[in-house]
Amino acid sequence: MTEPKSKLSPEEQAANIEALALTEKELKDLIDDKKQIEKRLVDLETNLYNLETTYLEDTAGFGNIIKGFDSYLNGRAIDKRRSRFFETDRIFSNSSTTTQKSIDLKEREERELLLQQQNSENEFNENEHSPIPFNKKKKRNIDLDGTFNNLGENSDSNFTVSNKRKRQRVEDEQ
Image (cartoon, rainbow, N blue to C red):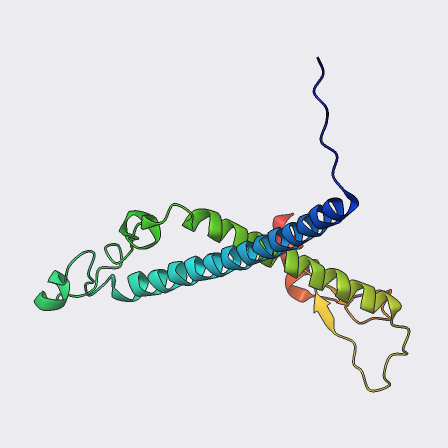
């Protein structure tokens, strides 16, 4: 009543394992290729979006292929209110369904890269124990309350400045 299970010989099992390993390697290579193609697509769509933005901004006042060239032919002065363009003018970027996702992804990657750079700079500054050079001047900033705030690396104190205008303002208010 039970059907006998077919048993594979050791040679057949080894061949199956080898075929499985080759298939897994091929699949991994295909996935890597897909990721590279997706990255190139994101780069191309972002580049197209940026070029389209530049074109629309540069030609909005005189005329372009979207709005026409009426203002260029008439020689009228550029109206800054009319020279703006709208997102609906983006015929190339809007023709792709993945452009907005690509732009969002690119912005996220740039933010993450910036954060990584800031973190690596912070780690570098924390690990740096070199003394301050002798000729390095302290930078000072004057706050609105009339105090100098040292912005140098060895500054802990604030210096108060006598300010005639500040005193006059206080006296005038009283």
